[in-house]
Length: 444
Image (cartoon, rainbow, N blue to C red; front, side, top):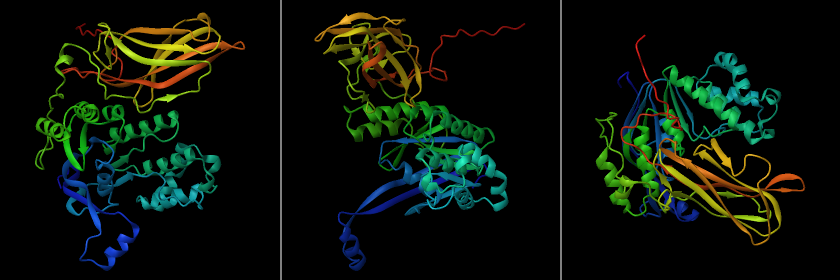
């Protein structure tokens, strides 16, 4: 394998025998000439390469074969056909803490797991204090891990896995562990691996993480590699695969393949064209009825109910695919079933990673609408210019009142509305917000 290649996957196929009943497995072991199972193909002739120092993300719907692929690359599964080659020390974070013995102390599990990952005893001795400090569990390191909270458990597992300082790091949805502060530490350590030339293969459902961390991305569907290209291009196609219910699945996959699908001799990074958009999107924003928030959470009602949160374009039409730079109104109604005073409504925008970007209230001070009675309905409107860069976002909705001298929520919906800011051909931008900065460069 070339020294410039860290991972090479060539024609990998993996199938599993699926039994309808437990007894069928026994029958199969006795009567081998008969077939008591159906064969499920998790991976079908997958081929690609990852260069040294490159970070490649893998996206795809549930059941597309992402985790199976990582397990084969990590060596915990064997393919039916095909080969996998890796160059350098490999550390895999596939199921955090899977190798922990609950009866062992944290200290004992650090030594056990680090040795499994390839560290010698003297290396573990040198790194032990850093592992404990990273996991933030110094007071509990000599307690059995069965007494740990789930957060302590995953923090220690992540700290051990990352301590290997691998040449190749394989990550399967493991960056969402712990609280926000710990996640930031994890991302910082991932960045450190990238900066020292490490190779990372990274699976996530979080489009923002793929765009932020990766140099290239792979789209998987039903066990096949459908597309490999820049993260933004792949995420755009991934979103179409998720939300385009009008196009037949086979036709949609073929359209994606025709735009860019490398063969075993071609894993270049030349760009694909963005996904074809509905004709009316060329003229403006539009509404995709299939883009519905699946993370919506409603808090208990306390005399009020938020109704029909939606985004409205300047034309007055409902939309959820927005064009950067245009004006929109986020609106919802609130119906009351008790007398309440000093009513306020608010909204918040957050990313797919759950980061709150900002929001607004209907009043910038304590007082709001003076009073409402049972049966009253009010409408909240929040007019804004879309300065978000292309990507997927969520809107919260909240209504509050003053009860017994305290301002409290009377109803609240988290991730009430899901929307997407449309991709733009030729846009060169990083981050989340378009600050409308006007740069200039002049010679002194």
